[in-house]
Length: 63
Image 1: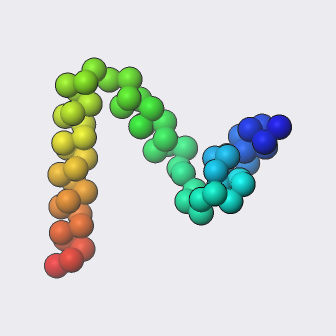
Image 2: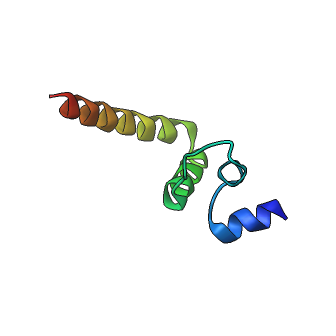
């Protein structure tokens, strides 16, 4: 029942029951699930690219 309610509201069960205040974007979660399905080597490339972008963005916000 709780799962159906969470799906209807488009939130996670953790968010629904108050275990977290972070509302996960469905598009981001879908992309993460797609990344998990990649071959290990491809996943490493995706994470390297993502890490580089996030580091650059954090650095720019400091400057």
